[in-house]
Length: 177
Image 1 (spheres, helix red, strand yellow):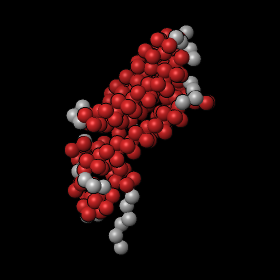
Image 2: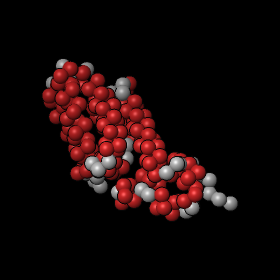
Image 3: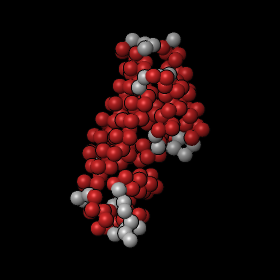
Image 4: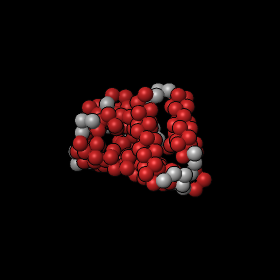
């Protein structure tokens, strides 16, 4: 009996390949081989690689939106709680891989910009409780840039990543008083 795969199975395989070998590895034949199926199985779900990439990015953006909405308000609306929640919800190696992919693919870059803007707005709302709108916007930018940079610098060092996140929060608290 043939394996029954869903688009999510293909997306998970693509995430693994993207993290391990980069976007060039996210190819139909490689994905099919990784999942142990024929390339025909791929075409059961997707019209081609372009369709797959579009839907993969939609999936990633949706997961990112869920993460952002989980951070937006309620009991998680403190900087330290936000960092812990981000670490629970996001795969930072995948995030870094998508950022690297975006350097060479305008479609990926535009999707990344949408996701980052959503995140920036959440952060700015959080900071607006403690600072002027202008300072909140700048702190949100600083926080987002720190996250993106830390995803590369501390990719394989989660303890350092968390320590850096706490340091960024401490700096932000110093600015907002």
